[in-house]
Structure formats: structure tokens, C-alpha cells
Image (cartoon, rainbow, N blue to C red; front, side, top):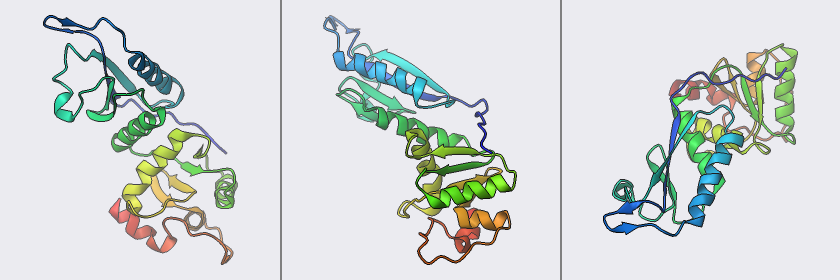
Length: 219
């Protein structure tokens, strides 16, 4: 029983693009920057097609007119792209994956998880099992395929890594119920009171039921 729940009203993630344009004293940019135009188009397309309902505010500035503003952050070679004041790209056409990940990471820090969400992939038997538990219990949830949806992968990593630690491998499924982190399919089975059959070949999720309590306290 999958559903889609939009985010509430939140402050948008700010993306700033400094393009090769403008003027400073007697100097004026006369030759347009092709990579700046490409970067602008990549930003627009990522916002439109990759981010769903993540609010984003894009501010395009002329680098030569305001060259000193990005300089303290290490930005000196247009096109310069900043997300929430942090440089993610400069001197070349923007990689859309880098931008998507940076925006999602910034958004995850300010927007707590709400509702029931399951991050998984089509070839994962534990994801299928977890979806079955939720469906049988009549629990509506948002499902995100982390293989087909890059933004879902970046969000899952941004939300789970602070809980389990930066060095812990992240597997799927990753599940939240009522906005609270659960972990994998075995941990979900405990919540919905389903018995899990022993299986020595089953891979371990990134957080086992025995560590669930500690993770919730640390979250």
C-alpha cells in the first residue's frame, strides 16, 4: 500500500551560480561562457526533474561584478556553484549528480523524516519482505527505489549515516515508521509482530535488532 506524502513548507535550499559575466571598473565580459550556460541548464533541469518537492532557490550572479564574494570560500574560477554557501563545483560544467547529492544532503539536515518510508531496490528479497509486512498490516508507506531514483539514494545515505556511523556499510531496506528510524526488515518484523524464520544465508542489515535501541537513543 504505497503512498506519496509531500514535504511541508520549509525554507528552500539555496543554490548560487556565479557565471562568467558582468563588469569591474573598465573591464567587461564580452565573450559568453559556454560552460556557464551548460551549468545553468543543468541546475534548472535538476530542480525540475530530480528533486521532487524539495524546495530550491536558485540565485545567478555575475562573477566579474562580484568576484570577491565567493573568494573567501575558495571560489575563483567561473562557473562557480555553491549549495548553502558551500562550493560544490567550479571551473567546469556542473556534474548533475554532485548537485543533486549536495541539495539532498542540505535538505535532509533541516527536514526530519515524517510518516512511513521504505528505501529499497527491486532485486532485494528483504525489501520485498518488508513491503509485504507493511501491506499485510495495512500500513501505508512511501516506497523509494534507490537504484532507479538517484535522489532517493542520496537521501537514504544522508539520513542513515548519522545514525549508524560514517564507516558502517548501508544496505537496504531502510525503514522509518511514523518518522522514527526502524532499520531493516527484521527490525520491522518485530514492530508488526511477525516471526522471522532463521536464515543463515540472510545478509545483515546495517543495524541489527539488537542495536536498534542504541541507535534510537543516539538519533
